[in-house]
Length: 377
Length: 125
Image 1: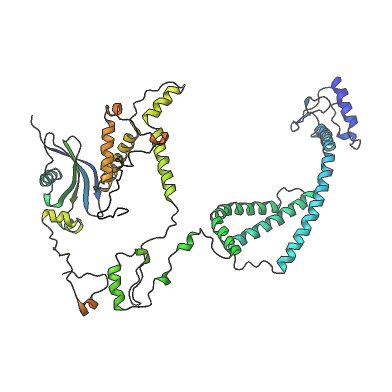
Image 2 (image 1 turned 180 degrees about the horizontal axis):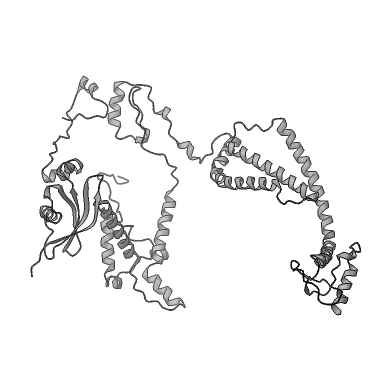
């Protein structure tokens, strides 16, 4: 009974244009035929309960959806009005811009025959995308459906092509930036590595006399091979073996790098590690780990052995390698860690007494040259 | 205690491109020094049932502590292939190749004859 009252209330509030035949005869008493296809559930906006439509296909659901739609529309109305106003303003601004742009293009202010064809393709694709999009919006705004619209397929195609072009774009980015910069400033920038390429014209000699050949044989060894020139016109051109590389590192930077390395080594030394263990709250771990230098050396040895066995050659061992191997052997002995502490002078601010190969740094004494006259005599 | 010298092979590979079989050889010789290469060639020949003149071994290194040596061995299909593909200095060890001894000194040339000398080229005499 209550149900019937509520439903009638709902029905009365709805649009009066619906004909009486549309109504689901739920209002009447029990046992309606359950339509096998109509199984939609809907929630009544009055009661909030979900109810199953048991009547004619979509009849009550239509009623209720219309009801719900109306509520939604009412809430959205003011925001829609403001949005439409904004849209109008923006459309006017954009039309003005587009018109000026088309005038410029038609007047030939942007010639692209000598440009990158890749960028041209991108331009055209984007324009086509815009055209299709506006066509779709027009159709949709005038009430048509987008189901199976040809424009959708075209849009998808253009979109996939643009996606595929994107990694190419990334790769070309450096080149394009450089070209643009060169075009704007008129010459290559100072740090551009292209400035250091070899100039074959500087290498061809204009003279081909005997004296020059003599000099060349003598000086050839002392000259840097990068500047090798002076071959007669008929002689074969031998290109220089050096590839010019931009050398940036100064003495200060090298010193800094050395200090950094020393600091890192000091931080992983046994003294610092024990201090850390003392002051940290973590539980104490007892590991069967050897000194990192030792493990690194043994890994390198294994790598070398693998290479030798697979290539069937024997590699020569340099003095530095031999020294490292010997030091690793010494370090792996158990009693070594009792008496030898690593060098933490990098952290304490002093200078290290050992250089990279753990050889003691020798201080040079100034020895006065023979025959040097003393001052005042 | 009878200590004998044993040879084992590892990483055996047939190299069709150079018509040979190449392998790693492990020699076990407790309480002895490394066997000379000729002996190892004989042993390998017996193992592979060939004559020792198609076999060449090289690169023997003894492991720390002694007793074990590892080296490389090549076993050619025939003597002709061995002469063609093997490195010259290894053939010289077997007596199958003689290198001509050239002097590295340059004969000093003075005057006009110097023009006939190409720039940077040293005549071999």
